[in-house]
Amino acid sequence: MKKHWNLQTIHSQTDLHSWMIEIAQAISNIHEQLQQLPTTNWQPIVQNILNDLQEVIGDTDEIEDSLACLSEVLEDEDSDMMAQLLSQHARVMQQRSSLQATFAQALKHLPEKEWLRFLDKPALAPIRFYLDEQRTVANALLAPEQEHLIQALSTDGFHRWEDYYDIVRAACQISHEGKVRSIDTTLHDVSHIGEREERKALAQALEQTLDAHADTFAYQLNSIAGFRLNLYKQRGWRLLQETCQQNRISEQALQVMCGVIDQHQTLARTFFKRKIALTRVNEPAWYDLSIANFSSDTRLSYEQAAELIITQCHRFNERAGKLATHAFSAGWIETGTDEGGWGFCASLPRSKESRIFLPFRGTYTDVVTLAHEFGHAYHNHLLHDEPIFAQQKGTSAAEVASTFMENLVLDAVLAQTNNTQDTLALLETKIQADFLYVTTIPQLFAFEQQLYHERQTGILSAKELCHLLSEVQMPVYEGIITDVYQHEWVTLPHLYDTRKAFYNIPYTIGYFLSGELYNRSKQTGASFAATYDAFLKDSGKMTIEQLAQTYLQADLCGADFWEKSLQPLRDTIDLYISLTEGMVGDRNCV
Image: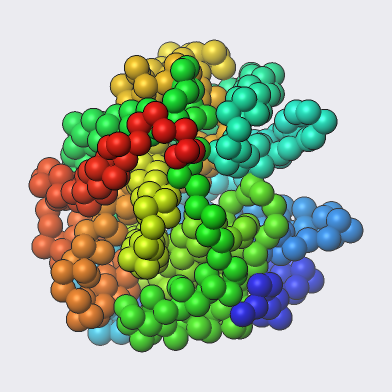
């Protein structure tokens, strides 16, 4: 099993530079065709534009993820070149966004009857959804010249706030007992150090550092929110309109889901009460919530983790098994050594491959994360056979396959475990992962909405942002811990994303859909694999609600689906409570 990337199919820095010059010219050529589009006999020209635009989107997507991969293996002497490439890519993406707005406006003005006849071509069936969606989007945009100006100014304006956040966050160093840590490494250590006093001291050092920089981060977040609010005002958009559009879900379905989650906060309270009771800590705080009460001595080598994932994929379906075998043997995966950091899966639509990066230390959590990222690779694999327009999916749909693969692998490990300590360690891992989706992310979504509401009347200070986050956290944690993680808004990059609005909540939508698909798979057996693959292949051709109705016969605007989807979590918590019933106060459990 290979532990490092095969970069031969990842384009070199020189190749990327030349490629982007060619793409910029292609974008200019398409713009010219759109500007000269005739009112009659436009069909052949539009067909050519469709082909050329898909080439541009596929190329720029591949370049973006190639740059992400190269950044992880970058040598210091290459950093200046990489900075130039990233700047060049930002300009190309601005040009692409402007082109897509022009394209959508052009589609909107085509005669309705002629357009519908054009769409009836069998060859356009896989991309019809995308094209109809673009016409709908165009109706919600400003005049083309205004949209072009917004895109042009955003490149070195709005989007630079996200870049600036990344720079400042990376520069934040936490000094503690003679050791300097990054934010990500500190957060990892705070969640894994078993000695409580040491954990507390490190958490306090983290909070002190974040508090010292909080005003800077608050200014960044206020600027992002302010720009977005002004843009929405100009376009006449509702606050959640963009995120719902990006994730192809209605506001009604989104609000119903959030309402069901709010009604079941007792699930989190039940689990965390027991978890804290098991620690025998007198004044528990936020850094006691994620620490493992049941530590397993089991460590899996990378080869064992790979074999586990490959085996489970083969049991699920042959296609997934073959891809897993190939991914682990062909150099698709790079295992970093840093204690912190984020895993990711890069999609290379032109090469029809993926690349995975993650820190791997051999814990159950690492194995599950590896499965999560491979789930993305499997989704990419299915979509790479589709036209580029049909590969465009929202984050909600993107998180379905990753969470599904987590469940597949974690349940397999649970089934093989034959001692209570390991079982409880795995149950904690599973429950903690679930509460990321049904507790932490919904809290952040509520925080963001309140932030945008209050930002309409002025700037929020760092202290006010901390208070705002504390208020949305307390319904779950009040009476369980004495100190919440009020600076979480500083350390979470998703809050500062300028291209995806409310970038947290889509993960929760994907979690629910994935859970129900997994339940159906367990109930139906091997025959469900074909339905699952079809769901993923159609993720770029349907809305979230259409996918749920077609493949799960579910109505997302009703509470029943979301209620039912919480049952597996409820069952897992019940099992955890039952197994720990006689352990409360037992110091040996930590």
